[in-house]
Structure formats: C-alpha cells, structure tokens
Length: 393
Image (cartoon, rainbow, N blue to C red; front, side, top):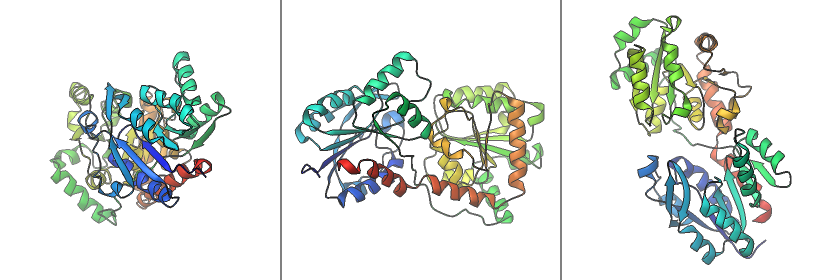
C-alpha cells in the first residue's frame, strides 16, 4: 500500500447524474483512508445545458477544485488548472475521463511516468468505426494509461485485441433515477394518469382518440441530435399503415427545428408532440410511463435508463457501431427488439408485435423496471470501479 493517499477524480464535466456513483466511490475509498479530490468546471452548464448537482453531499467526501474546460463544439479538448494541481499535489492515483482528444489528459499521461502516479482512464474506448489514423492515435493514447475502465463489453473486446497487454475492465454504467412508484397500479388508474398527462401538457385528447382507439404512443427522451436519426420515426408516421402511431419527444437540441419542419412537411405534426427540455426525473417518468414503446434509431445511451425505469419496452438498432454501450443491457431481454430503422416495413412489424405483447401483460411494466435496477445500480457500478483499481490503492 502506498504512503501517498491522494486520489484525483477528473471527469470531463460534473453532470447531475454522476453524483450517485461519485458518492459511492468516495464512501468505499474513504474507508481505505484515501484523501479525495474532485475537479470540475462550474460553468459547464452554459455549454452543455446538463445540470450540475448541488455540492453539499460531495463536499463531505471530496476536496473540490475548479478547472476551466476548453470546448471544440461539444467536446472538451483541454482542462485548464489540472496540470498544475497534478504536479504540485502528486496524487498516487488519477481517475480521469479518457477521451483521446483531450490534450491536457495526454500531457498528464506523459508527466505521470515521471511522478510515478497511476493513471486510470474511465472511457467509452473504441467505437468500432474509427478510421486508421484515429484508431492508431487512440491505441497510443490508451496505452499510456495504467488501466482502462470501459463502459461496455463491445468496446472492451476491441480494446483487448488492440492492447493485449493492458489491464482493461468492463465497468458498465449507472444512473439513479426517481425511485417513486408508478402513479398507477392497474389499468383503471393507468388510464386516469394518462388523461392527466394529456391535460397537463396541452395534448388534444379528443383529436388523439379520433386517430385510432388502439393508438400506440412511441416515445423518446434525450438530446435531439442528428446522430439519433429521429427523422426515421417521423417518416414512419407518414406511412398509410402507420396512422395509429403517435410520437412523443422529450428533449431539446440542434435538430429540434429540423424535426419540427419535417413533421410539418409530411403532414404528421398533429401526431408528434414536443415536450421540450425536462430534467426533473419524476416529470420524465410520469410522461414516459403512459406511453407504449420507447424508440431510438441510433446512439442509444443513458436514456435507456429512463425508458426501463418507466416500464417501457425498447426498440433500437443492434449495430453497435451506431450505439452507446448502455444499450448492451437489452441483448437477450424479452422486452426489447432490434431493427434497422431504414427498413420501415420491418420496423412497423416490430412495433405492432411489441404493442400486442404489452397489451396482453400489464405487469410487464414492473418486470422492465426490475431490469433497470439490475443493470444500472450506482453501488454495483462503484464496486466494479474500485475492484478494478484495488491492487494499486
């Protein structure tokens, strides 16, 4: 055991959804007599629009310091203030987010060899779609670290092939969502709560019911970006055989106007409802839980947690080069389906099959929620991380 008990935690940003796992990590390491330092940029929200948690709980465990993040588009390429603290404090271990475009982290990786600091990169790793130069750079970058902590099995497999002598661990992910129970317990209370959502958010229920008595509500929550390809769902609504489908979208982003205009162009805007940006987890759950199926054509990440916690079956793509690692929890899960959303006929078939399946089994919602807690518990996530670095603590 090292006499140097300092551990640095350097995320790219202090997102509100990271707080639970940071607290769990801290509780474990405090029991091992570690002095913990947490770094973040308090102005990140202005760029990312992702809320930063209140610091009261974290300050009980961490000494908190500010850095200044330099962005290129949405990516952090340099964190001012960390290199100086790293040299002065000389931590025994640095756990840093491992995006290979971050120049400050690359400099720290080089300095760490002189200071004999163990650097652990917490990262998505390889996506599987890297071109030759990017793959070579990421391989070199990750090889400088002492250990790699990777979210998903798919990326871990690629990393193990490219870095056969590196210590690599799959750690999964976590998200502590609202633990409240559903605002319904049976089909009658479900119908009542569903009506309250229509009223609260100004959705024309009469017009909605005129579309089809067996209308299926597709839903999505997350950043509205081009990578998600939500336009493919709007396109599906325009098919003659899809007039029983409605699409609810929670979130904002660069693609909002494009999606709105596309729905208007295809004359399906009356069946697409944009709720806008909502971060309150209880509100998100109350909306999603009365929809029928969660859909995400590509780039499905932590929003899978919102869907599962709301009791929703999920339809997405199985092409892992177009996915985030959180989607791996859906493999071999009875309430998930995989399809290429470009194949609109097959997509509609999958939706219809899933609609029939959940109609026959109202209790499916509770089974789906159990799957969420099984895969995204912060305590389990923290244990995987600490176990991976146990030999250098």
